[in-house]
Length: 288
Image (tube, rainbow, N blue to C red; front, side, top):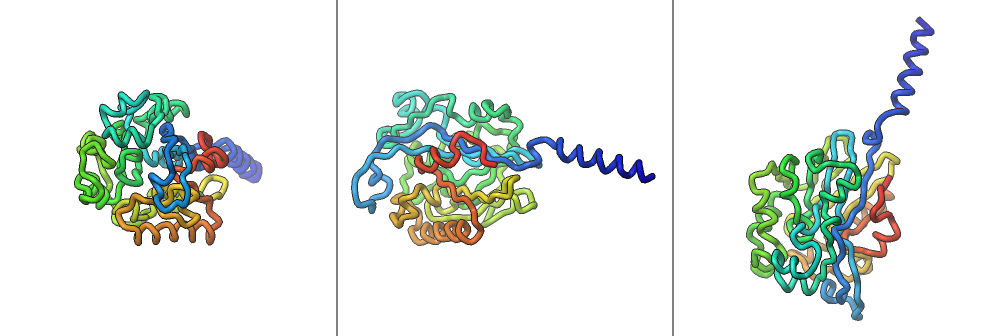
């Protein structure tokens, strides 16, 4: 009996050591092409001097033991490969200012393919908000559960006047309409996605009325906060507020919330549109 017990223990240890990589939560940081170069003051009017910037359009692919999660799907595939294509789908003004460089190979389905993941294998798509560069390709995932703050869906379909209501403007109506009959899980606040504390959706309104960020704990124990547009870039952390907000008060509160989590929990705070950070802290790589 003792030998049998010892053998069982050894086999159990071997099984643990040989467990598939998906059991150890991993996060991949991708970009849906780049925007720019353009003057930073077009996004952050309070920034004291003009300078040209180029920014990533962050998307995230998460391997969790209970399934694959995509956080934000980037720019719609239709704008790929040139300004002419962009202006057939987005408003010309958006194309002229943002200057998207997205190639078809940058789109989320191709990013997944590079990692050996099929679109139909994605279990959950979480969208931070309904702007054109974050919800552009939700229609590529008909089998996934789509997670939004409920009020963000309302805003995507009918923005406030000051946000612009052009159907191909900042909120591209066709991005949402194409997925209207999909399975949507509509939240009202923070949410523990898999019930294990490892993937938490954080309500961070301000940039839009129902913006949400995400906090994950990787297999290494490292906590990572993906701000998305709650914090665009380092200049926002330096005190220069983003210029495109539903509510500047809510935006400020959400920025402070994420900063406190970073400082008190020792978390890594990764921002949606900061090229210096993308290049230096693991863009186009797995975070482990």
